[in-house]
Image (cartoon, rainbow, N blue to C red; front, side, top):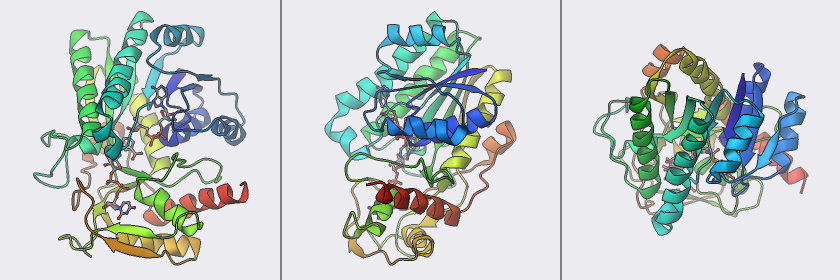
Length: 335
Ligand code: NAD
Ligand code: WQD
């Protein structure tokens, strides 16, 4: 089977490319490199020992997408390409709607023109908003608190309408919780441009000396130790979840929103403690006031993924920290 990955050189796309290639799928990558590096392509071919065609392309370029879908006789698309900064989405809403919603429409139009109806979408736990109960299951109300989350929800709504309009469509919207970790080779990992927004890449850069200290955004929440709690999921587990979802949509028509999380909630301090063991260092930290828009705690109900996809996360927090640090240390060596 031939699979097109949009945003294939990004953090989650690149790890999924490895697992797909290892399982015998033919992988084609497109990315506009707005948040990734071309070197990742060579590293993907090095890890897998396989050729992986790559096209530098913006997914809003529908006619170019059609050419690629035809050239490689693509059977299914996994759509990772998107912008993901919650903060930037509030200052640049049009950029986010254009890229995340407009980009998804362009891709669906290109697929339809080529009679391709198998689709996996990178959604996010952020579509749920303030928890009315925990763990979030897929029936939890969808009330995102920020523009980024709204773009993901709008894309999901479009996908649901598209699936209703034509019974050939088979679509999974995978709602990721907090992806972390890296491939065991240390050759690919999370590579954000600029100062990281997310906790794990920030901790990595403090450990490597690139950033002076870690801000702890609040230690007075009503959580196990006062810091925010999240459901961190190893990016390789997430990658395997996509392969499971691909197998599922090969056999089932319709629209399926599915959480990909572990069901385990971990605090900022727990993550730092685990990371300090991995990197054998002390993370300098400064407690600050709460970050605007942050929730105290959320984590996944992972039952639907287990039932429908026969998938569950296998790797633990220590493995996320070990692999993240291995990747970061490799980066520092190559500078
Ligand atoms: P990433 O930024 O590392 O990867 C996204 C890739 O898409 C980048 O390589 C970027 O260059 C590319 N891209 C962006 N817009 C594009 C466009 N218009 N055309 C072509 N390429 C484009 O992010 P990631 O962490 O790998 O996230 C992948 C997807 O998963 C995103 O849609 C994101 O919103 C979603 N997601 C991420 C997280 C997370 O915390 N990492 C959580 C939930 C959902
Ligand atoms: C985790 C915890 C922070 C950085 C975001 C998006 C979400 C999804 C994943 C895409 C929180 C604390 C963080 C720091 C800290 N992305 N923290 N110091 O906010 O749960 O989720 O990324 O879909 O939509 O909202 O992730 O890694 O930013 O924060 O104390 O420097 O770490 O307060 O408790 P978040 P995060």
